Length: 408
Image 1 (tube, rainbow, N blue to C red):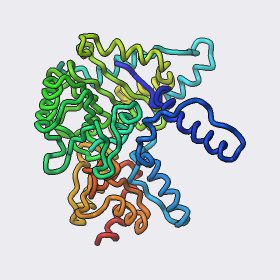
Image 2 (cartoon, one colour):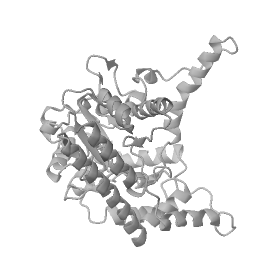
Image 3 (cartoon, rainbow, N blue to C red):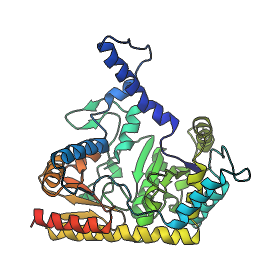
Image 4 (cartoon, rainbow, N blue to C red):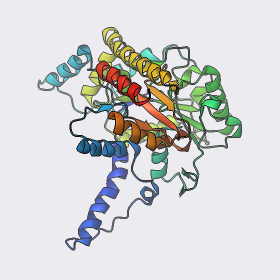
């Protein structure tokens, strides 16, 4: 098990490289400098337009310039809004203050994270366990060269199999028609649809991975929002330890979107085709490219998993889930079909026959509310909008009122 901080050096390097070359190109055109001899990552050229959320942010800025007096409400980018509980913030503050003392100062920690935090994560989330996609899954595959060219007609990349998840298949892909892949990205509860896979569905997924020799990357960042008996971890499924890696985060669980702390579980049973343990290479990469998550962030993470901290965090999760219920009832009362919102902080709202970006524009223009167009998550997201329940209660209630006036 490893703790990590988002934005490691390898990923940053891939993203920063084209910015440097683009700047060099501009100055060269102005006659003040020449290009370097450093080639651009050719895979960056395959990426289509802007990443979804920066595109939304740009449109938000344009809207504010057009309507400077409007009170904008964001139900779009899934950033948490409720303050971090005092017991957790105090723990980080106390640790930070201790760094000014000879006794409390610490430098580098273990790349894999502090043993106390790793133990707390294991005991809190994994003690009793048995042995459309988010845009970053696709873009990261393109950047490292695993994807083919983008096909304008289909809106998809070659060499990537998009597993269609729509209401008619309960947002779970038809594995009988899926071809073999090395890596399967799977998020449950899902972002953007809000659907939590059932035990039977995850058993199918693990069985498919075993039969095809694939590795599942299971994203459980929203597991704390599950209300029913849906599995909270892929490792609740027998045999998953032989075919899966699980990644998770304190971001949406504890409001750490700005603090940046998460973890990865790589079972010792997981191996490459030659029998070599995946965990050995994973450990080597982490130790080579990453010096570990911030000690201050880890102090906060440990406080989150204390009895008092854990209870405080879940009170905030309850607040967000109540927000989701308000929004779910609002959209349902407007005659729209709504999915999610029960096991996740996201609603997946269907606008039949409409283009997602058109609905985004209409809602923003007429209600000053930011949403997320479903098509930004892949071709199967067309006609849908993702609505985030992260927000202060007064903003959620006001958003519900505005939406009710838009679609009376």
